[in-house]
Image: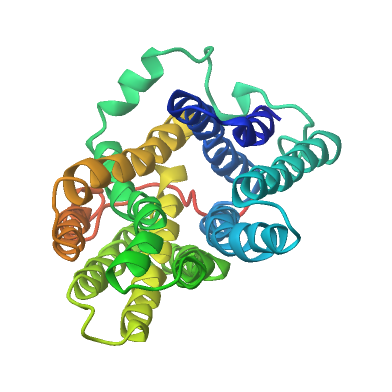
Length: 349
């Protein structure tokens, strides 16, 4: 509801500070991603939680690709064709996502439970014996695994957000394409969320059953590694080549970006189960941090149209190679055996 209000208000923007302020409040709504991941972790058994988290988040991210296409092709352009000037057309178009947000909020309130057995959530469900506090974040950040995951997520989800900001402009200015065509090609990146993030979650759940927690950890190496490879290749596709070469590379790159997001959040529920909400919040924030970092460090200061993609690829590769840091005393890691024996905590309830 909060987000719907500000999306609707965006149509009233008249000054730069209006735009900055409204975009800030719309961005706050992005926090619902964290609550959704936490909710899925509560609702689904450990042996399928990776798939559940990945599918919910993937279809959420799918909205970014759909919006690239729908807002221009199905709302803005038809309004202009109907006689509205461009300024009024985009303002009216913003009412549609606002109405959809209001509808979604109402359905969630009326139809959904917080947990499989209770309509309202209690912190006791996660095993916590005290009320949440700021110090929970300090405690969680002492865990090096959480810090690495935070930055790994900045290298996958943060990359997706950065591409949502960069690709349409890249196709329009560097490949000299019409705005509508550029938006459609850029939207293909987000459309991969239809299945790709779920695929990452499914792979993690399968390796979890086969090898324990060292399985999903192992899966977080090749997927972001290939993400980095195809991002680097995308940065090598210049405008002397046909635009569809860049599109093919973009689709392959997008496949591994979304899969990396799925493999990442498949591990999150196991990092610190008693602090699941805090871990989810920090890792989710890492994704947004990654987009800001990429914008200010890679894309804004570098004027070359291709070099920022290549530098960004190196950043992704760095964090992909730090996966061996993930270690659980009772489960081990990619290369180390468990330090202590443990009961099988991975069985379905």
